[in-house]
Each structure stands twice: as structure tokens, then as C-alpha cells.
Image (cartoon, rainbow, N blue to C red; front, side, top):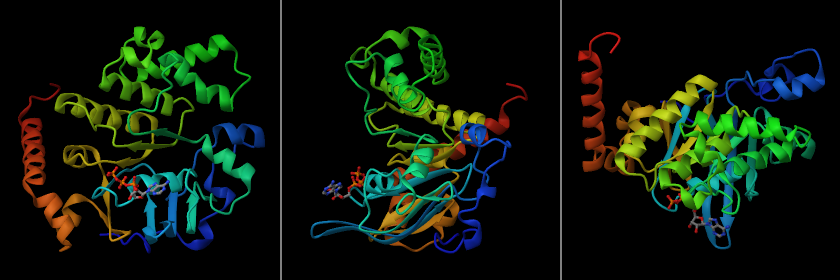
Length: 304
Ligand SMILES: Nc1ncnc2c1ncn2[C@@H]1O[C@H](COP(=O)(O)OP(=O)(O)OP(=O)(O)O)[C@@H](O)[C@H]1O
């Protein structure tokens, strides 16, 4: 299992222009460059305190390019605070956060803006503007970062993003209150994808969905991640999601990331929380359901 602290690239690789493709024109580069380094997110020595409460202490984590990393931990262990620290909504008490090789904790503010339009976030509950239609919600980040796009093109991009998430075209003109919970999550995802991000943050995307809706959202996440080449940071309590779509899982406990690895690797640890979480009744049910799905897959006729 990888130790979050020592599995990264050499230090001299951390912030180099060579981590991005070069199209030969700085303007074009800023629009089309894709991160080519191994770790789009690097968190080192993160400490977050709120008054007397220490949520994180010397927490470190590296997220690999192209993976879906599941982030788990008991309630209140600081999963959302960690996500907020990475996307700059929470100023850490101490520590260093680097996204796409650029420091967000002590970087040049202009560079930070250049990084912000390269990620999308689906907050818990979707966080849609209730007075805007789904299409208008998707247009919010487009207007913020690309105000010069003509309105017709803006509507077309928004419509395309909405349909990419499996919503019907009619949903574009609906208000969030007119949608089901699952549809609202998809609308939130469409907004998170508005800027063609390389990095997607999902905070409990399947919470509140029925099992069929949750499974469908998992499939959608995996399909989009593969099709769009995304790196996904996914906070979840949903064991099925962990088993079905996560490449690795990071476990938060004792104010740190105590382990990162595949589920079989995590199961080899003897940490009591990990043991209870994955080998408790719900963990065993999720394992059994994944084993059943795999055996059905094998017995299905080719091309079915
Ligand atoms: N802005 C804030 N001010 C004070 N305390 C905060 C703030 N944000 C978070 N906290 C506290 O930090 C702790 C971690 O919160 P966080 O929301 O990250 O937990 P979590 O692991 O995501 O929990 P859950 O699984 O229940 O969503 C909680 O005790 C919370 O009350």
C-alpha cells in the first residue's frame, strides 16, 4: 500500500512548466494545456484548526492523475474540510496544497485563478441556484471565466453539458425545484463539467439517492471519468460506490490520512476503523454484491 507521504515524484518535478503540454503559444497553452504530471493534487503537512478543535494535523495525501480516489472517514473527520482546503475555500492553519503543480497556499494569485478553472465541484446537495434554470446554472461558471462567449454558444454548451449527464433536453429549462433529487445531482454535475475540467470533486454524490439511482450515478461517474480523462476526488459513505468505481481509497482518521490503497490493500491493515468499516455487515454486503456482479459479467454472452 502506498504511504501518502512518500510515493510522489521527485521534488524537482513538483512545479515545472514541463508538466503541461506546450502548444507553442502562451494564450493557447492557457486554454488547452493538460496536466501531464503524476500527481494533480499534493497535500503536505496540512493542519486545520477551528478554535480549540483540531480537525487535521500534519495530514498528507497525493492523488494520482486519472484515478477515482474515494475519501472515507467517520462523520466529522474532516473530509469536506479537506476538499475545501484543496479548492481554496478553506485557508489551512498550516501546510501546503499544490494542484496541477502549482501552490495554492502560497502561490501567485494569478496562477491560482488559472488553476481554478481546471476543476469542477459537485457540492453536497448540488448547491444549485434555485432562481436559475438548470441551463442558466451551468452557464454561471462559463460566464465567470469566459464572459466573451456569445449567448447562443453559451446556451448550446450548457445544453450539451446537461445532456452529457444523462438528463433529458427538457431539463435545461427547468428550475431545480422541478427536478427529483437524482436529477438535481446530475444538474450539479453538469455545472461541475461546464469548464471541461481535468479534476472533479464530488462530495457525497450518491447521498439521498435510492440504490438504483445511486448505482446509475456511479456508472455515470465512471463513464465520464473514462471518456473525459478526469481525475476524481470523491468523498463518500457509500460502500457500493467504493467497491464499484474507486481505484483507490484514502481513509481519514485520527486527524490524518491513515492509509491509501486499493480495498484489498486496505483490508490487509489492522486499523480497527478500517477493519470495522470494510468488514462490518454493510461492507460484507457490498463485497458480496460486487462479487455477484463480476460473476454475472463473466457468464454474460460476449457482446451482450
Ligand atoms: N467553518 C467552520 N467553522 C468551525 N468548525 C468547522 C467549520 N467547518 C467544519 N468545521 C468542523 O470541522 C469538523 C469536520 O467537518 P467536515 O464537514 O469536514 O466533516 P466530514 O468528515 O465531511 O463529515 P460528514 O461525513 O458528516 O459530512 C466538524 O466537527 C465541523 O463542525
